[in-house]
Length: 141
Image (cartoon, rainbow, N blue to C red; front, side):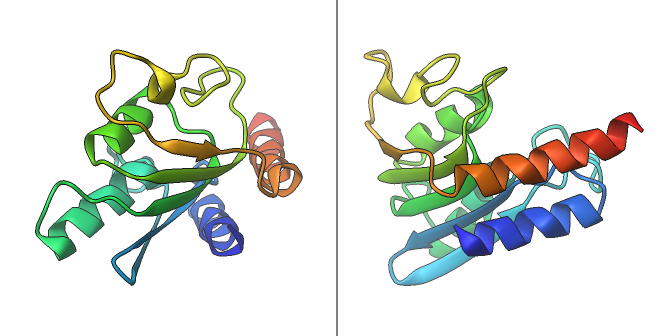
């Protein structure tokens, strides 16, 4: 999670919402940060970018592994995690406005989804939430 926090800081420095993601799969490590503003691309969330990088490098869409991300995934990212057959999601702070892994909705626990992702939340939540608060406070000024 510390590496994901560092990636989130890079995103913030580039003007993007500070979210970082680190995926461990098959002894390999993949990293990404939010890049919606810099690309510009509405799907360039850290989770989506790290899944794309892993799929390309591994040559498969069934990715598996463990994903560490600084904030609870949105519905798009939660769906992608299930679709990519990620085994474990570990995230920092909850997203009480749009979280889809237990806060607002829980796509990953839905009976309608054909893959179960083990979810661990609250890892370094205070630190990850502080990054987001700092970013949005600066935006409002």
